[in-house]
Image 1 (cartoon, one colour):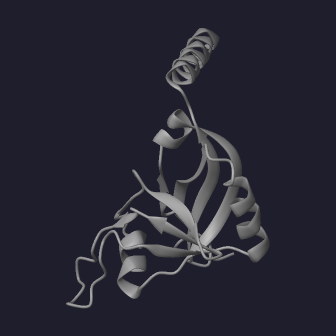
Image 2: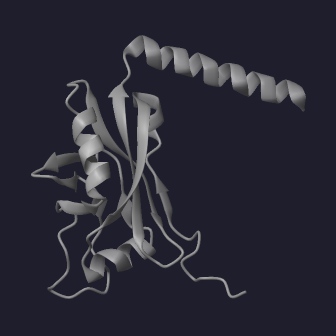
Length: 153
């Protein structure tokens, strides 16, 4: 079987999400992109830090997702931090809207990756921000797990 050239080549993660937020529900969404944007993503020239999603008139958009300009692009190159529309079903969008009615919840971006067909996908999650004592507790758990794994070897 022939391997796809896009398979497992791009996997950009936002590592701070699991530390700063408690994940409640996860979704995978497509993105509406321009030609030079997908070329930059294939070169792994994207940053997910400080990116978030919001709902506007029944559609979901991602903001502050930085996709660097394509190096071989012309004057028609894209803006690096433009607002991009996400592609989800109406059922998923209504679930997200209903969940966001609780004021302490937000939509965070977890991961940017390419599907086997070469489509750019975004893993998003409905999340609740952690307090400082929750962050300390998760650090203690992580340290305990690390100690246990060291003792096994």
